[in-house]
Amino acid sequence: MIDITSFTTDLLNSVKLFLPETTLVVTFLAAIFADLLVRRQKHIAGYVALAGFAVTAVFLAQQTGIGTSAFSGLFVIDSFGQFIRFVILISSMLVVIFSFFSDELHHSNTKLGEYYMLIIGMVFGMFLLAGSSNLILIYLAIETMSISSYILTGYTKEAKRATEASLKYVIFGAVSSGVMIYGISILFGLTGTLNLSEINAALAVGTVESVPLLIAGLMILSGFAYKISAVPFHFWTPDVYEGAPVTITALLSVASKAAGFGVLIRFFRVVFTSGNDPGTGDWALVGSIDWHMELAVLAVLTMSIGNLVALWQTNIKRMLAYSSIAHAGYLLMAVAMLNDTAVSSVLIYFFVYMLMNLGAFLIVQVVADKAGTENIDDYSGMGYRNPLIGVALTILLISLTGLPPTAGFIGKLYVFSAVVNAGWLWLAAIGVLNSVVSLYYYAKVIRNMYLRDVESKKSKLAVSPVVLGLILALAALTIVFGLYFSPMINWANSSVQILSGF
Image 1 (cartoon, rainbow, N blue to C red):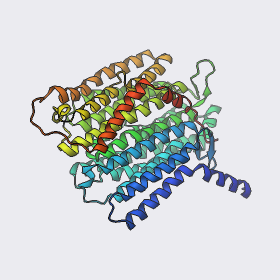
Image 2 (tube, one colour):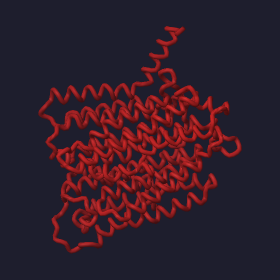
Image 3 (cartoon, one colour):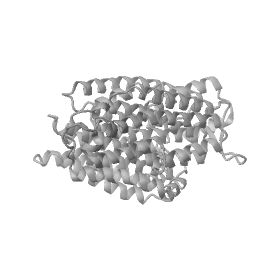
């Protein structure tokens, strides 16, 4: 029999812990009413979104140091989830600001109120995903963020490629979701529960057959791999990145990927490990399946195919799409180590990846709006048409390559160090070789900006002072965190606590 007093107390405490997510729901409703009542201001819903995100950040900061569960173990609040949510929130705030200056969105005949509302809904889904500790809640969170992203991808519906991209995204998403939910059903049949910690307890007993467990695990992994653009579930990425508005491409490349990696790491940490091995510090795996090797193979395929295919791209959005796939491979390389040091390196990498990737996409947006092109060859002479844009893009591309003195170097250094310290030298060597390959296609853009069409009579590229300030700030931060990275490292090291649902 349910104790009403205990249930009520737990519910009230859970509501207090759920304040960041509740704020997002209130922000969503406020954006709807603001858009209905203030029709003359096209971006009113965007301003409401920014205000809501700011309040959400305050409530999220108040959860520092908390480690507990809510709603009877369905949702957890811990330092790991808080870090992922902050990455999602900062990325989303920047994307909303980018949207204010996007000619691509302004040329659309569709009202922008729904656009900002869908971004808020997508952020809510990602927040849920970052703290879910139940397989059904994980699935619902993925679907919540996915539905919004499907619509946002094709938001500029008068563009043929946007409609095509949205349709492909829906088809691939439906297939991966179907595979994932079937894997969840198998795992439920094997263990009799959907709670991650209870699944772990069932596996620890040792009565679950390895073969069906492996099949279920791989099926669920395919759903996560789809969200992070891991091979072979990456086929949607280049078409969606090219066809979607640049702002949404930027959001998918950072925030959506952060949420995907957050739930992937939590799933493997809670379900398949029994704490840290006192001898090595690695997570002690439950069962006979070597998840290290499965994830390592996935990492090698992802970064190798992403980098190799990027070499042949002529559209800069498609190039950055394959680059994003390759970066997912680097992150998976660390995840495959399954230890706290590797998780810390993933968090460091994600923070710097957010800065350099959003900066690069903002420049792509500016060039597409002002010069009407996304072709890499048309970046010829860009370093002279707007020297500040040229310098900023050069810094960001160097950071994406992972060269000093940028923050990208620090991110890769910690990822590779985690792999080497775990004894996987061959995997680290493949990662370094892939970084060398990536240098070629990033350098191609830099070459075009400074060594091609130098004497061209093309007009100067005029950019809004606010947008130029954002670009220079993001580029500068990649240098700052490349030279002074202690706060970032300390924050990541203190955010490796991953709780189960109890």
